[in-house]
Every structure is written in structure tokens, then in C-alpha cells.
Image 1 (tube, rainbow, N blue to C red):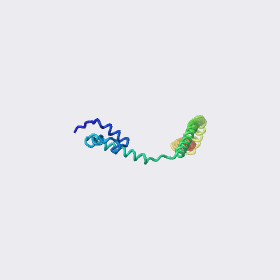
Image 2 (tube, one colour):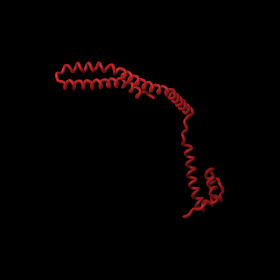
Image 3 (cartoon, rainbow, N blue to C red):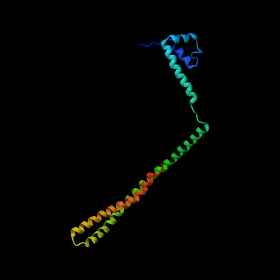
Image 4 (cartoon, helix red, strand yellow):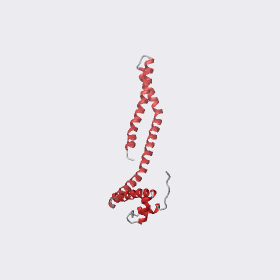
Length: 170
């Protein structure tokens, strides 16, 4: 089935869209639409669309102007607050990076001073054991314990700072 266009189709559509179909338009156009398959289909579909459009115009809920103004004011305040806190968030990140760098610098500077002290402690502890193998094992254990203790202390110092930045509001 091939569909052909009718010359009266635009007139039918405009009559429906103007709300004049079928009573407010030309009787000859209505008679033609009853006989022509294309115009009859266009009229029925355009009528459904027009009626649905009219119905939806009455169902629309437009908020009160005061409510719209209030929402806009709250949104503007929120946007300005977020814009004002962006530099502070950046500064918090820079401060955390500087704190980590200073802590690593202090550990790096203090490490050469701690090595002789730790060597004396290890040799003193190793002197209490009669066997050289046991003393070596204890000394190695103390070295490992000292290193783990320093790492643990660094983590205990950095953990609250990391939690502060992780849980702070952006």
C-alpha cells in the first residue's frame, strides 16, 4: 500500500491546531476528510495530539515566584560558599605536602645521628649473649625493630593528618 499526499492535508492540520476542527472550519474540508484516507488519518492523529497538548497545559504545576526566588538564592549562596572554600582546600593540600616533606627531612637529618647510638645499643645488647650467632640474631632483630618503630612513629604522626584531610568537607 503506497501512501500519497493530499493537497488538503495542510488545511486539515492547521484547522486542528487552531482548535476549529470539525465545527469551526469549512464544511467542504470536513466532507473531503471523511472521503480521503490521508486527510482522515491526519485529522484523527492531529486531533489526539492537540487534545493531549491542551490537557497537559492545564496539568502543569508552576511553582510560586517566592519559591523560585528562594531556591535561586539558596543556590547562589551555595555556589559562593563552594567558590570561597576552593582556595582553602588547595592550601590544606599544600600544607599536608609540606608537613610530609618536613617530617621526611627531619628523619633524614636525624638518621645519621641515630646510627652510632643504635650501633652502641646493639653492641651492648650483643655483649650479654655468650654465643655470637645468638647475639647477631638479636642485633639484627633490634635493627629491624628500630626501623619498624620509626616507620610506625611516622605513620602515627601522619595518620591523624591524613584522616583530617580525607574526612574534611570540600
